[in-house]
Length: 160
Image 1 (cartoon, helix red, strand yellow):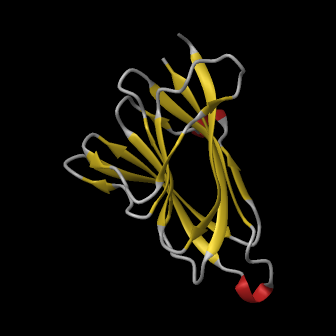
Image 2 (cartoon, rainbow, N blue to C red; image 1 turned 135 degrees about the vertical axis):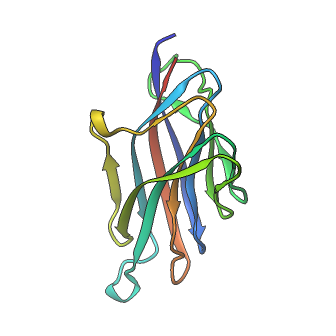
């Protein structure tokens, strides 16, 4: 089957609480590799509104509980004619992914000055790989002081 690259996005969501911006569940038959992600907002442009939000990436291994309170996102192939993605993608889950009897591994910690778009690209050797049946999240650990209208995009590859 080979590998295919997909994108998933959400647009103009009012963010008022800590949440998982993205949660990806790898299908049971293939692994997922995260290539990069982008976050931006359109409501807070002045110095007085500027804030720093703590962003983490997490891998849920084995039995973890998916987040909820957000929405399903349909991944889109970057190459026209590619098959539909087999991954399950959710966005803006206000109840975040938590450990069950599996393991929750925090992979990275970032700080986002939400006044400026934040685009993050992994180098090939640092790309997180999510094994079949495991999950990955891009989590906003800190709630904004007030409502922020956020959009986001993630790029990932299915290997199988």
